[in-house]
Image 1 (cartoon, rainbow, N blue to C red):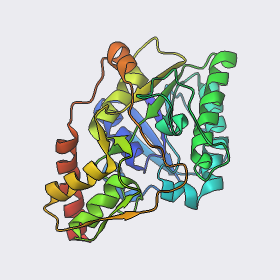
Image 2: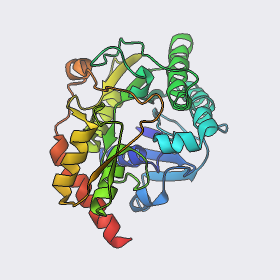
Image 3: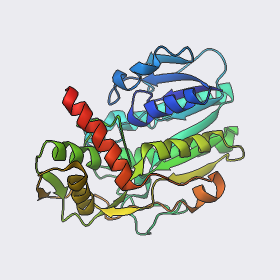
Image 4: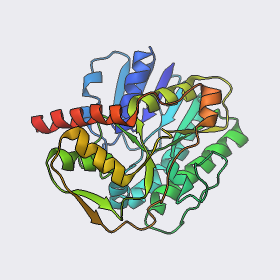
Length: 314
């Protein structure tokens, strides 16, 4: 296939570029490097099946030749990033989604949208199945991301219903692994960076809020299955690891695995911070034949070693 991946220089986008190239496809990557980095894809530039354009997807997009598949993964995904770039975040998931869907219509390409567990907000149903509509504050500080992704989902489904575009939606739960930025702002890179530098580990609230963490290799496999399997038009899938940890448990585990002398300190919780987050992945298991294989303990070991090496080179 000839595949377009937006957000190609990002954490997930760069791993997706690798996966599709490894499977023998031709990949075109787009990224404006607002939060991604050329370092993530530098090793791919010598590959004859990889083409990259530095480009902002909030602008009109046209590419020559056929396209079989579009994966729209461009968007700031960390609270630090989308609170720093609130308007651009909304533009990427409105104009960017509109432009990539328009290209999918023109090229008759399959379309995979990177959505998020944040569409469920602070959930009142636990764990969260795809049928749950969510509990979201539409005007809170996190709404620039939550509502942008909800709009992207609605727009994608409108293109599916009106124009027959083969749309698939991946609701991605917390994912971690190599190529996350050290200053990403998400909980795992924050904790690992603090632990490796023996700094205090900052836990928001009392640490009783829960999250579910999926290692990046597992997630990429799930997205690949979603993108390549036939007969999934208009379907939504939760992709994540149903192992549930409190944030305090996560902090303690990272201290243990890194051999750190860090102490845990507690800070005020951000506004609208969800209390619990855990995917119901029954649908992905039954239809995609997918579930995570890497345990949180094993995934954290790999991620800590990657961060340790990166810090030593800095």
